[in-house]
Length: 276
Length: 362
Image (cartoon, rainbow over all chains, first blue to last red; front, side, top):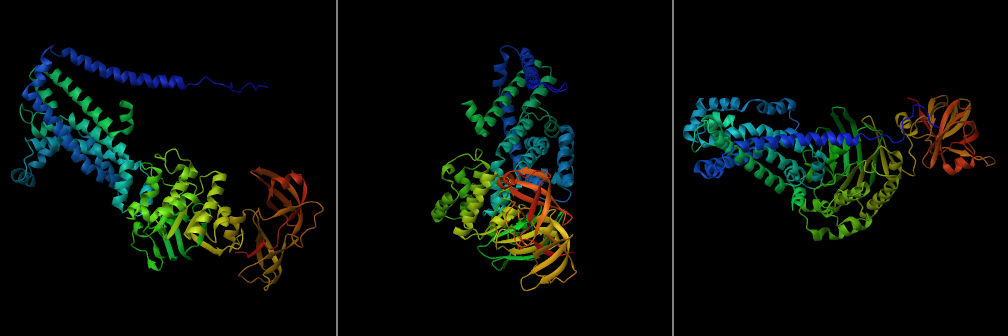
């Protein structure tokens, strides 16, 4: 006996359509990135790439970029882990306000942040610091500070999410088993959150590696010892050396892909198994 | 020994009012009451997770104010077990041993004992805890909590998420742990049957107040007041008037509707003409088959209004003309079948006089 309005017993599943749409979106994104790479490659001079890469200027830019990005990311993690933990766990009055304040630098343009940093060093204490301790403006440490300022908010946001995903109850149990707060963090929260923490590191590194605006404002843009890869690309492009700019872009892509892939595989046990 | 003295907590929606009670070493103490009654706040204060309280918490005579969680020697198992997902089964078991700086040799014997009691040998070598069933996780959590020989084990709804069979198995395990290892257990549960099955003493916490703390002499709880009566008996609480009472035996005869009922009273003196309530839990009343000689008191004719088939028992709602009231009674499936229990059927309801309590009306 079938009721007239009864649904058919087996309804055609829409799951396949959904999966197709999701797959299509992924294909579009990947295809677009491939298009960017191919376009860029077409701008490359045939034999000039190897020459470009092996010049002292380019090698210097590569080393400086890697060192600054790794340094800034390391400092961001050192500050970010405790700060994000505090924002995630402590009952600070007005926590939502502090939490939101941390996000503000993400919305500011890097050049704006750079301007503020420069302004900071033109104040009395800032000048004293530059003259007696360490020079930042138009100096290499300024690059690291600029990248750190841009990246830190993002790092904290990612790390806070990582800690939010670890139930506080696990720490409570660790403490009833004899762990101090620090030991509970060290032996439970940190290892449980480790995957998300590694992701925060990788994303922060990528952001720092590509940083241009704040670096330009704080450390200037001139060929030589303060020239990171993004600055170098800008300088070549400005002096109408499009082929060389394209070469450096290609190099940046290769380095970013290589470093991020290595970091990702090293820090994720599941992926390590998948790759080997 | 754990002592709570005038313990008060006010924390957002959670509250406790002046809770005073003590728990002897080796005792199985169950805190029960409806959800939101304050059981978890009580437990978190005892463990040291909640430090905003008034009053005192004493552990073996030492005031615990300012003593951090890790220095208290009270182990804790919450309802979601809290297995550390990044450690192996053995890593979970030995966590507290390492953190308290004990040597594995010191706990080897204890570990063997716990593996036996909780039947953990089949899973102790597992490197991943993600595949463990709920019951297995709970057993690992219990063994982990007990391995470093705490002064007390605190359980918050430890059986709430388990299947019936696993729950029964764990109840037996908990009884054994308490009896064989002599561990003091404080166990919070909403489930009164669980409380009555396990507790040597039971505290009833409703809306932040400890209404009674009672040493059990069987699987029955005598409510101390009408609030507890309503919680444990649901609809089976009826207004009545005292006809006579006997102080020596604690027996009172009351008039409920037109029916005469005989029940027991405790503490408060009852006088003739006093307004009271009488009642009992649905699982404490029973039905008499035709031709069975009735007990002396409290047998009433009734009509079945509805029957709910639930698990291995049926819940029957009876209309009792003598009492002019509806009475709920739980009937084992086999009995229900023998009595041909169905809507409209006439039955005889018996309410054992030693289980029918009489309380002053508030």
